[in-house]
Length: 187
Image 1 (cartoon, rainbow, N blue to C red):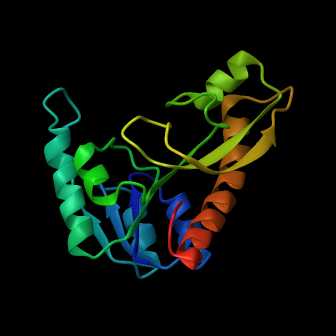
Image 2: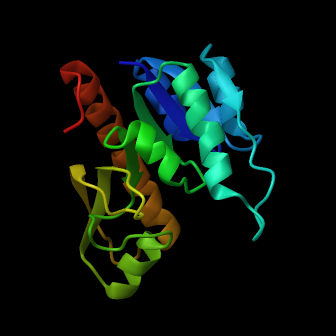
């Protein structure tokens, strides 16, 4: 199963994936970022499909077509988001629906969206965690594949709690992706 990893940031999830032996065929980034160096350090093919606008003139559908075309040209069968900062549109679902994976720093369906860790602290939960799910057009709403709980400590800040979640999240994500590759299908 040909795996592509989509990344936008420092590449810590990508690095963990590569160090743990996931068979990454392609890394795709949407902006110059640390993930490019991580890919190079691991000898992985990396392509920049640059997002040139972050304003109201951004052509999300057109950009999604460019990303999707790149993935299809490389024969990709499974897509794993790894801190990818661009929300993609319908064309990627048309090509890879049910085969796009993502992680989220909460026990979905609780606290979807960008501020999940802050919202968990604000709500006063005693346990939060992380979720590996199938990415759909609706953000953080796809089928849940795996979850793992993380206890909230009384003195936690967003940063301390998020760091503990990320440690668990990387391991859970890697194990889930490897299980999918081993069995040959997502759901």
